[in-house]
Image 1 (tube, rainbow, N blue to C red):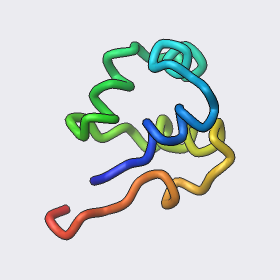
Image 2 (cartoon, rainbow, N blue to C red):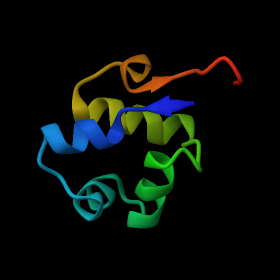
Image 3 (tube, helix red, strand yellow):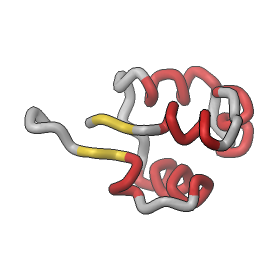
Image 4 (cartoon, rainbow, N blue to C red):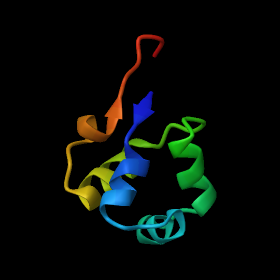
Length: 66
């Protein structure tokens, strides 16, 4: 699954640490999501979408291999 979290962070001028604090997760979690090494829970995906004022499908995209 691809995501645009890094782009959204840049648009909102947030570091990984700042985003992590807003969401109540670790910076490592944000790093792992951005690196496509971790698929967030539904709750975390919804929190990210809400924070960035986007639909979940605008941030996360399925790949053919998913």
